[in-house]
Image (cartoon, rainbow, N blue to C red; front, side, top):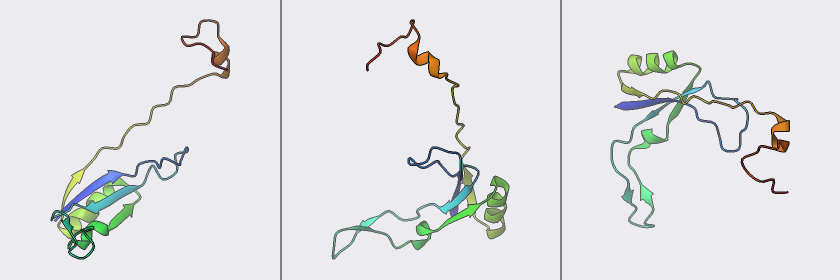
Length: 101
């Protein structure tokens, strides 16, 4: 079995950095989705896709995958860069865009 290990992304509703240091290990889908005969919804027989394990560090997640005998693919965490801005930059005379309100 193959496991994908990645850093937890920030939620769209989240402005802070809480939970960014968490690592997630989830199983890669083995079989494609198939339409259900009764309802027509996409279903799968592989229930391991529903499992997400959370770890405090990358090393713990890799150690778990190795101890279970799973192959793993490690995704590097995305780097968040912030540009420092000052409030007075909104009122500069040499702004590139016009003041809209």
